[in-house]
Length: 397
Image 1 (tube, rainbow, N blue to C red):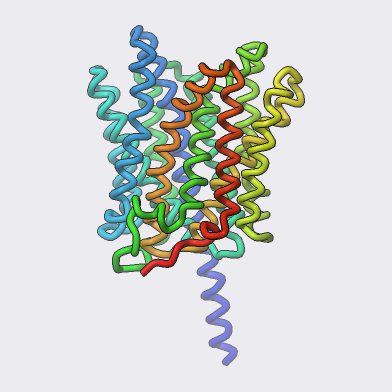
Image 2 (cartoon, rainbow, N blue to C red):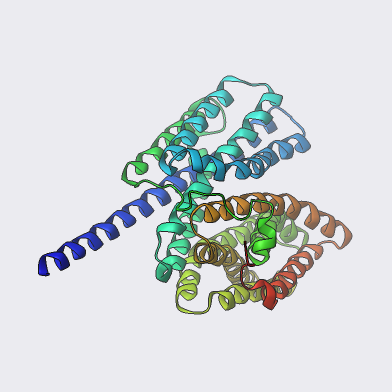
């Protein structure tokens, strides 16, 4: 009896250690990839700007990656039925390295559009497989904090790519070689990862597109966060300048927003582990309403503006942390992988719509059309999050 108890204890300890190693490996892999993303996005834009390419084409090139994410996300669950998670991640990393070599070797702009599209496809594989894997192996009692830690580390990694670019410069082969080295490093943590195949060997009861009918609340959460992120990144500094701020202070406003998006995710995850997750989700949306409503009134008070943007963007980003936590609570196996793939599709749609809708709003009401759109999006999300019928996944056959 004592021997069996001791063996069970050792098995539990070993299982916990393996889970921690795998989580650390996945977070490390995706974070290094995040550095690569944040390196190449401004790098390619600067290269094209130096070639006097039009802003329209530069923006079009930037949009190819989200389009690749949308298409790639549809096929990832099927790929997970054919390959283990680790093998699929390694294939994606190898293909990404090949694409970086192509960027370096080919100077044709049309070819770059195709390459950037496929870089988005590989990104969908890396994010969906890693996030599904993490959500599945994390105990429900700590899932919120783990998802918060993941989003904090990932958000922080996005600040490192531009820093590397300041050291390598935008000309020559060095920034491309840096990207290749980073992707090679991203493969190393996977040595510590276990083996992952979705628990369900059969088909999911929904697909990527029909996921909207199963969990509309999670879909709306994903869309509004992507909408806000892409709109704020592209237009918030413009809003600051048009409101009378200096260019440096307008950019600093965006920095404090990104800082809030990184720092507040672990506390929000803790709240999601200790309190009703649906109410935490709605509360993040309410902070999004309050921050957007306050923005026009604090934009001329720098210290208060930075504080408001820090809290507003931090809590609004927390919507996605709680959405990921709920996905891990509501779904398992292949259905969880399909849910994460759906997030990729709807994130891409929200990311494309955000700058377009917000730009039109600023033209119609200059400059306060931007916070007005943010307020409207937050109000809709809070209303959706409080709708009783959508606060739980729909029944599935």
